[in-house]
Image 1 (cartoon, rainbow, N blue to C red):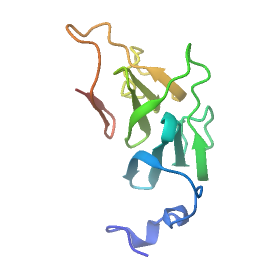
Image 2: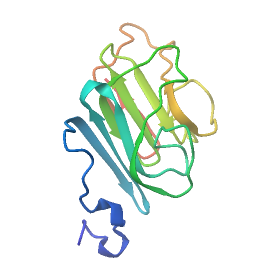
Image 3: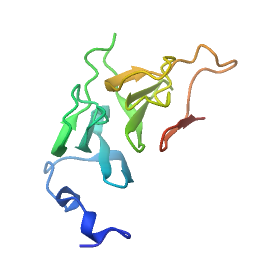
Image 4: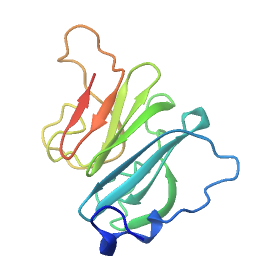
Length: 156
């Protein structure tokens, strides 16, 4: 199997596998750079699942495995004040972000460059979603799209 220019580095879990017979996914996003990779999908109802590497909590399941998770982990939102469902997800190098129907953005994973947008300065990794701080934005404080990059995140 060959993926791009890295046939020798293809993780075994990039091979197709059966998630659930009735699973329907509304959105998916893959993040890959060097040896760090992950995949996030949104199932019906907004439940978000990620699998891959989680050194920085980028799977959003509340833990940092330090290894590869070869099966989907539910992105946990239980620590938030209300249960949320994502309509969009974007995977960056070592972090991920989700967007709710209300236009609120949440990010999780590595925050070493402030890419989670939570207002903290160079914080430790967040292993579950944290709300993007919009207090410095003038005008509309809702997003219609988010895109996670290498060590940054952009929102429209």
